[in-house]
Picture 1 (cartoon, protein in one colour):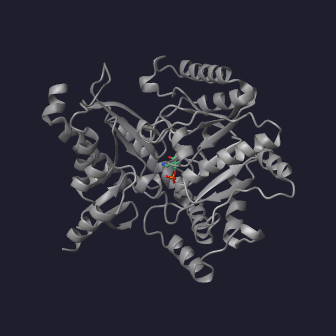
Picture 2 (tube, helix red, strand yellow; picture 1 turned 120 degrees about the horizontal axis):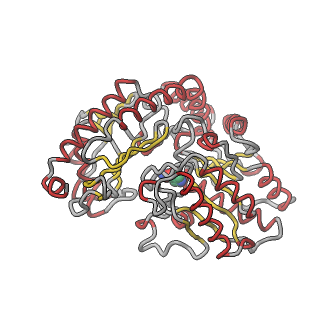
Picture 3 (cartoon, protein in one colour; picture 1 turned 180 degrees about the horizontal axis):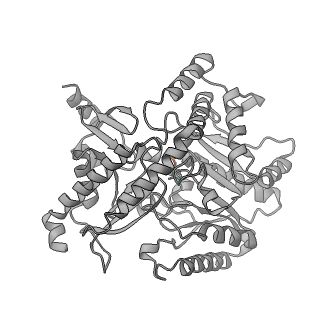
Length: 456
Ligand code: PMP
């Protein structure tokens, strides 16, 4: 009874993110009720392994008492403090300092946001201001990568290269440009790592030349492309792009909203390729989704240029909830958990997940398995040699998602027929084995679908 009324209320009033509104009205909401470790339970009592950590964010897992206590303590003591008027709060100051200590290179200055989209937005504002301060206001063109995702604000959605974020929204904006992705499974230059790196470097050079180097402000990358289907670049790709940006006098922005905080192994994925960006964005694992928060990291050079450029004037950028003390207290607790064992456990669990997924490569529907740490994907095809995607007509992503759900697994099913995995770092061996076993069962069942069978 209660469930029915929730579904009705949701249908009538709650607008869902990135959904077909009419499709959702028809399907009805699935209400999640509780979570513990890597397991979530829906309102009907169905237990599932959360193979996607919410939206790749609950890195610490559900029900972490230390986080709950930190948030509760802060809510009682001081639920809010503005950063305006020169004010601040202890947790925010401490978190900025702890993060700066651990961030790559000289990313010593941290600006807190509410999530990833406004972190990306903030980088665009900081970068514009930086070039103005250097007397180069004409450096106002931005480049990102096809299949990339950089948020859902107008500016971030324009840097994003997913068609549904553009169509009907008048995006991208005319100062937003793209180069092809490294996507090695479907790259026209083939899958040789060096050929892919060379092609990406050449594409970036060509794009900068086309726009004019004196006009290009910055280049945005995800160390692993997440929402585009978990696309992992070859080793050395990130470094090559970083070096090219330095040579061309283009700021290099690493969007680590998904990849930071243990998702790929270390605290920051840039460390995997020994890269120091000029600016870096994070969110998600920063607070493990327990409270909204994002963070922009600025290098000494970027911060000092902005600070000196402004002089005594205020830099007009800030949110009511910048550096929110409760989110910051949660962030500090998360950091303690990561360094107190979760990073190590995540690396172990990641190795088990990747080995298990690779062992599924012989399944007739598995075209490619890829990933790093606890960030992985399985690309489904009906013809391995031709790399033919699943037949689109019957919405395979939805079908695979629903079936996995019934099998007790939450997995991301991208419309391109890619399954995405980003389970919590607290996963036990048993949790990982359940993810693998339920994935295989889901694939076996999908193989029996008449339209899939006839496409084989
Ligand atoms: N950048 C990247 C790389 C992301 O993956 C996301 C979210 N998936 C964002 C930015 C936007 O973050 P948010 O949804 O917290 O606004």
